[in-house]
Amino acid sequence: MITLALIGSVVLLSAFAFYKYMTANHGVFKKMGIEHQPTSWFFGNFNLAIKYGIFEVQKVFYNKYKDKKVYGWYDTRKPVLVVKDLDMIKDIFVKNFASFVDRYNLFEVNPPFRDNLLNLRGEHWKHVRNIVTPAFSSGRIKKMTSHIHRNAKILLDNLQHICETGQEVELRDLSACFTLDVIASTGFGLEINTLKDPKNKFATEAQKVINPNPVLFTFVLFIPELGKIFSKLGFPILPQKSMDYFAQVVDQIIEKRKRDGLNGKVNDFLDLVMNAEAEAGHGEGQELTRTEIHAQALLFIFAGFDTTATVLSFTLFFLAMNPEVLKKAQQEVDAKCGQDLPTYDTAQTLTYLDMCINESIRVASPAIFINRRCVQDTNIQGIHIPKDMIILIPICAIHSDPEIYPDPDKFDPERFNSENKATRHPYAHLPFGQGPRNCIGMRLALLELKIVMAAILQKFSPVPCSKTVYPIKLSKVRPRAQDGLWVKFEQRKK
Image 1 (cartoon, rainbow, N blue to C red):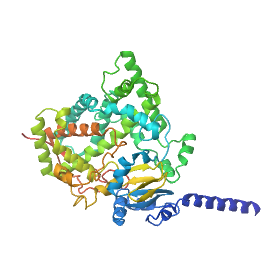
Image 2 (image 1 turned 120 degrees about the horizontal axis):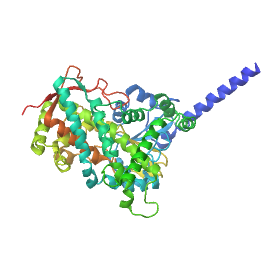
Image 3 (image 1 turned 45 degrees about the horizontal axis):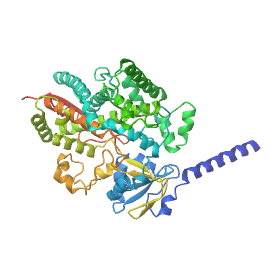
Image 4 (image 1 turned 135 degrees about the vertical axis):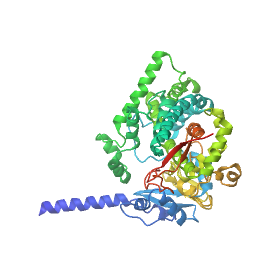
């Protein structure tokens, strides 16, 4: 009986301690005078994200607190301040950037991915960003165009076969193969041809990394401190073997280029990062360590592969569903490019295609939200934001606000013509973030999208097929269409 009583006491004390741990921060917004939803002791408000899905939950509470600049949200036990006001967002990203220089990372990752730009904070982030930035200058990106052209031609050959055989195609899978091939080529000078060999080692390991262990991820979501414990026990959230594989690939390429005297001659991302020291000067501390090179190379893969594939697949699908928009885009491509693949300079003139891409990103954004961590007590637009508060910008809800974008579910590229853009707040469209910590690869991603889309539209027309489901219903947890993005491709007749 004594033993049972002791065991019972330990269980009760443990349960009480766990309850106190999970609810310790649940009074923060009440003290701040910020409105928020009632909380569950275990979920906080995360049960609502489970109920509605990560896209719809933003819209529900964005509209509920329509007259508020901000509202509170408890991501299990962690308080998150959701900022809706566009002027406040501008201040956070630009005017008060020094107070919001860091991102919030749900869990820590091990080397070689640890020192990537998304994870880095403060002066370390600034140091690496300053060195890597020249790799994405207009001149350097222009030199990467040949890599995009080579992979676009391979894609066109595949589409020709698909067209001749009358196959129905799921655009997400097709786009992911293409964008991974471009990443391998523009990043590391590798020709992996995932379109023909989807099971190649590079593609297989990349898929493992963008799909972390769901059980471990769920545990860390509720108790972030478990991330460190899992890693020490040999169960990292991101597969360590896959990370190490890519680090080894980077090392092998670097050593081979040194042996062959190819440094500075390949014009890919790794080549440019290796030579970034020359751009920054030769003073002490003005170069990247090998670990930092590994981390940026890995980030180049994972930030550029999945997101670009999402935009490409949705844009092609929306064109297939809107034949009048498709026709106008093809007319522009014909007028600007003729039968030639678009050059870097020609791609900059494809205004209507750019409008289509931006509208697709608005309707089905690959980025669900943007976050920042407040590093010092700050007052913005009359609201006090304490140090260590996590800030969340609800991109999907802003992009779907009918007061900003009337009839928001409609695909209408004209929202992004020069006249309409001039009437909107500049922070009403945030596909790549804003300010000093915006997406460093934005221009390369847009160039890749415009070149490949122009190349496809020159020769083919995406059209609905028997498997097409439209309007799209998004997955609750990822920027994916629940029923896929199915189309057929028809050969253009000129």
